[in-house]
Image 1 (cartoon, rainbow, N blue to C red):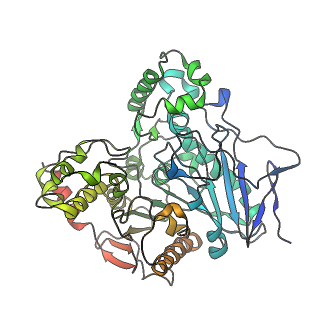
Image 2: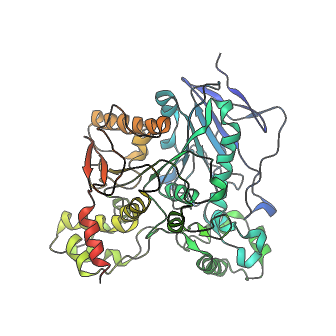
Image 3: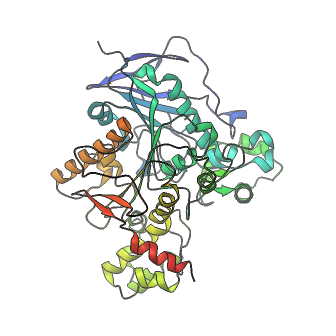
Length: 494
């Protein structure tokens, strides 16, 4: 008889058996952050009597709806602090645990998107997989320390503190689901990866995970934590957009959540804040001072990350070459304008190129600025701090190529999901997914990604910078970013 009822420290919950995996959905890991708890750190949930239903996903965080973040759940609510668990069995086997933080520019997405289904991790990998919802946009990242005082000093990081609360819940409860609280791998993609890099320097997260994977995002370079002064300036812009006076804090507390979200869509990218409390120092400062949590890491990015944003621009395909050259002088998706560029950069990526070659050059330029460049800076500075493996995801055909988020279906082994838009031979896709999936699983089990499905993957060293290139045929390549690092080094001299 498979156990679907589990006793947590807050009460019993009823899950559901799906094939050979048991799933518990919509588990509340913190109190609903409503009323006076809005903009405040998450609080532990109240205990309950009886058996709580965990057979259906709960609401997702308030956000502007986007088909990219498709989910079975249609409800939006501030009562969104829920997590989901997939396990081979609620027993005493103490399996490795993987906790996934979703992306979405800190303004969209949820832990229950279908591409994040944890069934394969549980059935193929003998892993307990957890996905998490957290507060987004201004509800998760609006800094009110200057406006509302010490009680709200961490308001700019509520979304991160939600993630910490979820990890604390895992620490306290996951053994009942067949997981080992001392063998937790934290991983995330895009804003989820940025979150992981922030959690690596948050004192409250220390000891709550023992290894980490950062997919397409570290808080360095173009995507960095903001300081309290910059965050306060963002808050002033938010107040202006809402027509709220700076001394009218109660208006923010009482405003309908949908209004708060919808009226702040043009503010820009929400980012974690170095508030001196929940996040004492920036990621780079944590590395320099040795306060970064010392755990084994996998870090990487995709070859053509920004293809995702270029090809979602309805004007992109119709632009002439000259217009494409100036495209980076305007905002691209959630990212600010990136040009014009010094001569060495123009020469490397743009000069003399036409048509598809020019298009690829522009995409790789933007990709290096936003994703692969910061990843290279991170691995260069952290290589002597923690065991580290570096990858580049190259798989992809057609105009989207190895675009942003395209590795997710391979990581979760959910390549049959219709939202993945994968092009290629089905056998190649399934083989690639099996290898990448098992590599993430191996890291969760052993703290080392090596397994029989990939070539030997040595840890990162400065002298040769070994990088696993994940493609139809996986290969190890030494220093694949050598030329780009050289070019950007030239730029620093101008």
